Length: 250
Image (cartoon, rainbow, N blue to C red; front, side, top):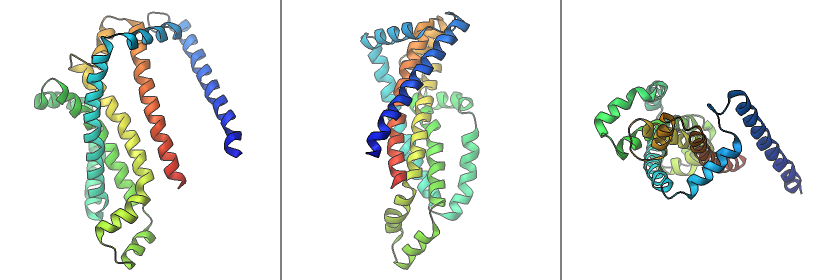
């Protein structure tokens, strides 16, 4: 009953939020003018035209493919680095400050190096996307392992569990909620990095479409593409957040 009782109130909150954002958008349009912002109705119409256009989907597929490769590298690579450093106290004490320092470096300053190494094309987009997502995943994984309660590790030693068994039955279940948080943040950062890569050196993809619209100052196109990207990121982030909350409740 409590779940059913909360559901109408939760949906009402969502409706109020959407209406508030819509009103804020309209007020911003009235204040800034059509040279800076397109109204919600026109933006939605243009977004619908994009979705119905045959020219849109090859660009969306190019971005999706680069993002998929970058996600696999960032999430799996970040997990591997985090588990390797977080599972060893000395390695973690040495490696975590280095990762934190590298994470604080603006990634855009490294883009010329990435272009020289990988050249133009999908490889550079994948590398730039993975570079954004790997560090938060690794740092959250290290933090999750460090925050594992010592009594769990003492129990594993008393039971004489092997290192692999300890990691599988003790460390990973205890650290999983925080690791999922890192994966969620890494997912968003990877998407951002992939799109930035398309903005600067690409002839295909949603980032390429966005930069061309900006160069031509096509405000409805800019707003429509931004809305489509925001919608995808918001839906994916919401699904990951649901998984994260369920794990935290367990």
